[in-house]
Image (cartoon, helix red, strand yellow):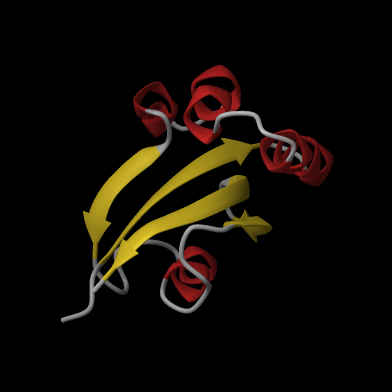
Length: 92
């Protein structure tokens, strides 16, 4: 079975998500941005979600994690929870 590991930052607006993505692409540390801004409890762990399989996350999240390029910051990805920046750290 395919599994993936990822980290994310969850915020309430697309604009906030885009602003954080710009900061990260400009050199800001993803984990630090997650600790400061993420509305998900995982933010305290730098956005780390651990390892999970297909179907364990909401559909929009799964589509990115199991198809997009590793090591890149993807998003904004809108789900029922808000807007995510997602970095896929491992897939196997």
